[in-house]
Length: 115
Image (cartoon, rainbow, N blue to C red):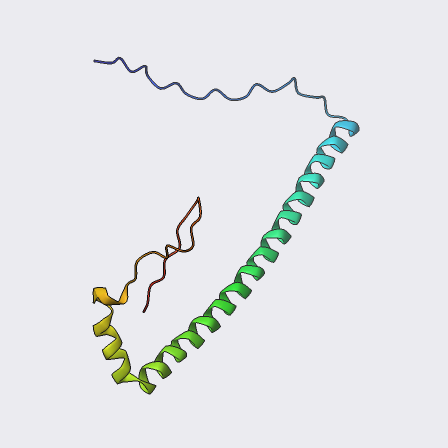
């Protein structure tokens, strides 16, 4: 059996000696807080811009999905008999052709499928 050592607690970071209360120390603390506040505000603005961009992309995708669904519905209604005959022919091996032997490439071969 493997001996698993007990988990150690994470020791808190050792801080430097506390500064005496002085105007300079308070000014330094104020500067740190203001700098952190500005950084957080910039990050928040960036996140809001990103959120707006994502919402725009979702809107575009929603409209594209809606248009595609309408196109599919109109195609279904316009030619219901031809789509049934096309579905019957998709499984037959006669619709596939062998790779095109006149076009050769060292990295890949091109072949055509009929639908």
